[in-house]
Image (cartoon, rainbow over all chains, first blue to last red; front, side, top):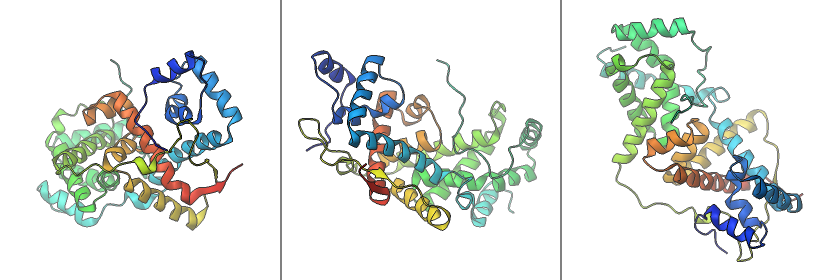
Length: 102
Length: 213
């Protein structure tokens, strides 16, 4: 079992043209391209055919989407106002460095 | 090539956005060397810039130093700022640059491998482990703890990958802007972003995993 090196999209196209089908590894490797709508329509259709029959890949796509959303929420200053607090000593240090002590 | 305006996703200030007239007046005061204007900007925007620096640098001392560098650089070059974006947006970009400068100066550590955090597959393309669903995020205090654990997980990502995830998904830079800042190609940014997201997903899987359905 290996995560392997990044794969070129042309590798996938060549395999599909040779009669192969989308597998779970393809789904994982080209997921971002799928979500960014960077796959051609034919590959996208075949990608979705695989998702329709593979529960694990559907779960993977959904949890990948959730990962991005959760990361954004965890760092959003509106939802986490304590993250936007600046220590008074840093404010003083900046103002002093500017020659304008507070 | 025309690029979309720089628009950090985490940009909203904790108070109402300033009007164009407010911005214009504040900029004029900054350019005139008004000490009160400098202090206003540092007090209003310092916290947000520090949050940006912490996401990129993780280390608290490094982050505070980068924010100080950024404000000093910004104010020394205030005459070059033409006001074609919000002051906060301009400062955000300078802060990101100050953080990246610090990263470049640091002696490069051995790159931590993501291998154990990426999905593994057999020769037949089947996964080593089936992906399950995740339970819904909690509410209230538990939600605050969950968000903290997510921030800790982001900080655990190898720097090479964390930077791209932070710039693209958190700070809202597009692929071209990220590639330019990191002096790499857009293709490399896309590969690193996808891998960073996969690795973060793996780190979060233990926290959120519900089961197969």
